[in-house]
Length: 222
Image (tube, one colour):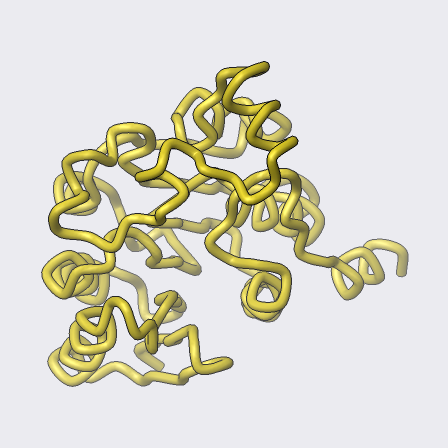
């Protein structure tokens, strides 16, 4: 009963880091994860690791500590993507926090780049035996991993049409029939290529699509 209560009452936390998912949408997303109850989880676009930390915390509860999380990201080497992708202003402006105290702590005291592989690894060290972080471009990495093992995939990396179309082209052709693919920012006004790429991929691979909260596009083969 206690175990079930921990699952049902699990709340998304922003921690003290920048996150692509703020509390409202973060909770909606984590509820999708809880409903799906995945054992193996892939995230494309780890950013500072907040979503990863929440997913790992929940999966640890659901699976009694036995789960696998794989995260793919450019991490601190995001400069190569600036011309082609929608990059958070937070990164471009050298970790420009709205909170001056947070800026003081991370930029001057700790001198820590929150989107670096080192920082994210430290943030997720509680689950070091369950996770794997791959630094690099998803366009190079996706074809080299076994996508059939994943029960759930979160696509939130590059936001150009070309990147999303490539990622979904690889993912939808190689996942198992029970895998749920969740794409973030489906209706993001500043990256219209995301919706176009998702819609085309759904038609081409004959997938089902369900849009949640006007943000998440959930794709499945069943």
